[in-house]
Image (cartoon, rainbow, N blue to C red; front, side):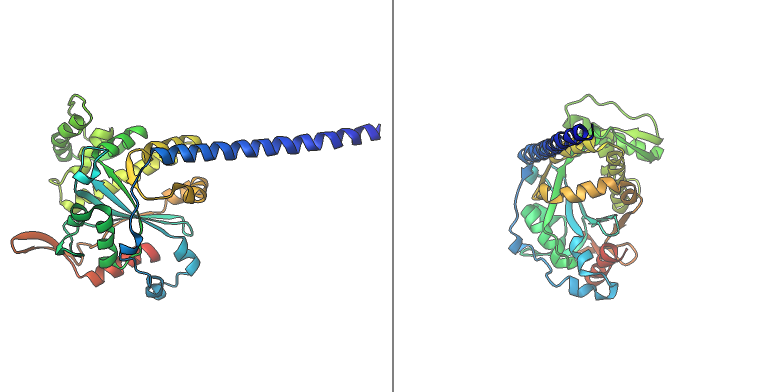
Amino acid sequence: MKKEEKKKRIITVPRVIIAIVVIIILIITITIFMITNTLSNMMKMELDEADLAVNNELYDELTEYGITKKEFDSIINIAFFGSDSRDLSNMDSGRADTIMIISVNPTKKSIKMISIPRDTYVNVPGYGNTKINHSYAYGQEQLAIKTINSNFGLNITEYVTINFEGLINVINAVGGVDINISKEERDVLNEYLKDSYQIMGKEYVPMTEYGDVHLNGEQALAHCRDRYVGSDFTRAERQREVLTEVMGKISQKSFGEMLDLVDIFLQQVRTNINVSEYLGLAASAFTNKDEYMNNIISAQVPSTDYGKGDYIDGVYYFVADLDTCKKDMYEYIYNK
């Protein structure tokens, strides 16, 4: 009897091993297929990294923060541009309506969203002192990132650009966002909403509610564009709030649903990111999504604490000491 049991075990174990190997191969095959399919749908545009004014001495400038080289190397800084182009296939036709740095720190499990006001007075390489959003108009992502790095002492090489239509599609894909808006904001939203629905070829339907409301993609874009209630800085706050809500909606999905949403998102953007390099981070972020969502920092550099509006040769700019801006940027990304 014992011999028979032993014999059964000898026969059974290899079958179990074979089954496990087959499952692993299937998982790897499916993953490779999904990555390949996603990459084929992306709008890729590579940059010349040698011409991005990357600060290779950045780590040496952070000694006062006591950050380890391992943590420094793990931090991912991505330039996020919102183009006012209406055409997904021609993002070069627009201006940078939104300029933001998205910083992910896997060690602290944190996400930082740092807006740079589009009127910020900086030196655009090859064009002199002007508004930072002109850098995108003059040379798209290549020049815009070079301008950010050279003025704020950063080492950014990756970007994501999305336009109006793409943002609408992404927000609709996650099921819309929940935002609190005032009656005045609702009224301005309705003015921009006409353009949103026109972009998508839909009939205009005005919003009637305000307070805690649910916004679809068209409505959320209109809310993000509002520059009349509050200031341009309030407008940037709205954009970060909507982006935070989108991330929150994504974090509530299952892993499979998240992958589907990522696939949809990547079809709406232009980027030079190698998605396959971030699979490990994506898995870690999913496992620790509550920590990440509870550790989102929203900021603006330059801040209104040390920056001010000024007219130079009759043109409005947001002017601030760039050394102070650089320290502020380092503080948010590497010390908070």
